[in-house]
Image (cartoon, rainbow over all chains, first blue to last red; front, side, top):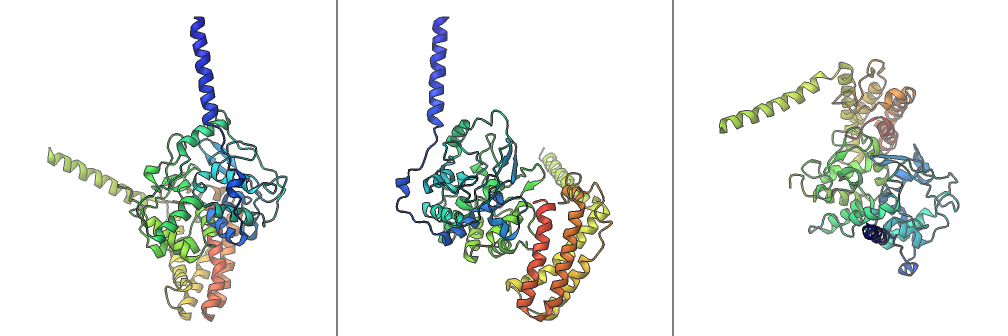
Length: 297
Length: 154
């Protein structure tokens, strides 16, 4: 009996050790970024392509207010409601005192400066694929935006989702270092893939999730239930989204569908973001969508 | 056996086909009416969007007609268009979110804002492509502001 207990204790210690090791937050070292100089002007297009304002601008912010990243918007999910934090350059309440290495660690590894895992409502699984130069440019741009002293609010999640160390396990499953679409792409389609998969994170809404809340990469952009619990988010695969490349690109700029209905819900804000990109970049996103494998496959 | 399978398959196709048609026809009259109003707006907006995008040549007369129609369509009193129980939680075939009925004053304010933007557009729509384009911006923004809050994605 005693021997059995001893084995049990050893097993528990080993698995606790394994859990600890496997879920260890991974930081980006400052030396890795030593050669980078952020360009705030270039960072503005990364900012709009990345859709930062959609979550981090205040709820109901319009126009210039979408540049004030005070946080506060709520994202409903089956794991609880996440509240976007203040990421304005305020040194107390925002990220004004962060180093570039801390910023890149947050954006691409999903780790806070204090070494905690962020919930993947923050789409670092997508941003992970972004170039380090784009991250440095984005950091420079965010630091030019107005500071807000609005305190960040806690997420509304309950046990066991509250154990952020568990996110380390989630990351083993879902934090990947390759693109989903790995077919031979034209230069334009590849640019579109970078914008859609690494920055704009279209799949966060347009791809269904598995039981662990990760994106089902086998049903990429196949449409998904709306996380608000009402209706569905449409599929973007070419068998479902039959608009032409030009029609898709125009929609991403002015929000008018080919039947001249306008973008609704969260997509209205996505259009506001993407209207700040170049026409070439919007065409590239459209070309990428046309290169997606159809649902039937 | 094979015949049975074919019969069963056609029964399924017929049932689903008729099902969809029935749903569309059974939408309450006010829902059909407001969707018709939106479609008419879409048709007229489309004329202007095509010119603004450069897909169609700017035509002062057609632009003026479209803008005038938008003024007329956005001044329709919608008192009978939004009865309770016609949101997308209750009905299939509408994208109207329940938030409309929780924020009716704001919803109506946004409709009034569309009317004001349409007036601004009609004042200059026949004066040239650039003035039309500039005055069209607020109209698109008015559409988006309401859809952003009160229209579901799908």
